[in-house]
Picture 1 (spheres, rainbow, N blue to C red):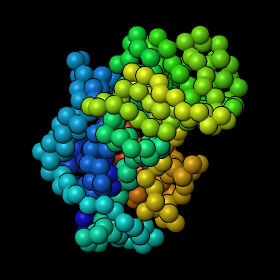
Picture 2 (cartoon, rainbow, N blue to C red):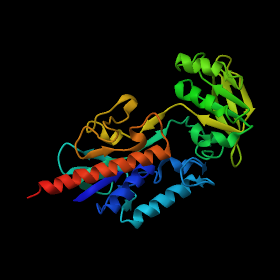
Picture 3 (cartoon, rainbow, N blue to C red):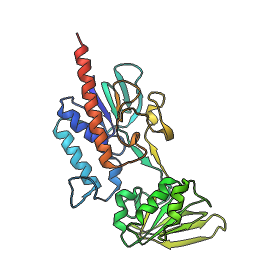
Length: 308
């Protein structure tokens, strides 16, 4: 029987681990298949407080892991298969064993929706990115591609024009699904060029992305375009599969929360990108991880008071 289990090891999960470990809750962190979360796929992180020269994403997560361990958190390289939150103690099932806990923090994060093309993982963080706010500044004076047609894609393209000299917004259809106001903003930006009815069919390069192969879906013609960087903006997939039927879901399969970190099950708290479809930043995830840990501590203290 554990006091607290934290599912996920990104900024939200590790911040929750640091706070709960300092509170002597002895948390176990089930790291999942990507220990460190999405920051492992980034290069230089320049917008995380305290690093005036920036920090590599993997290095930042290593520091968080070390800090959590230093205070007594136990990090376990296991992937959660299913959970049972209907009865107490809560159960968390991995391939290796079944854990039981008095309280849970779900910080399993989200994963960017990818195209699934060859070299995509190889070039991730090396010309291919999934967050303009995180990495757009690296393309000052350069030419980039943004892929997508929704609000996120148009917003990313508009944001990157602060830095890039040219942004090609590629969409597989002939019209956007983005809101009217977002479309008008992009259409009025001279730095953005729209490439309709087209899709990426290949990533080309040696050590990093150098060019892409484009297919015109109307004519069937393929062309190669040299490019400095590419941003995928085709959505995110929250890692909520193990919680189906156990926790309440919000739109797009994100977990629903009240007061920022409370799930619909008392004793189960939620933090980070698994519930945050809007901001998706390391610093906001860390803040929510802190909040979840503080609430879990209060919850467990209440349980202790109720004991005879």
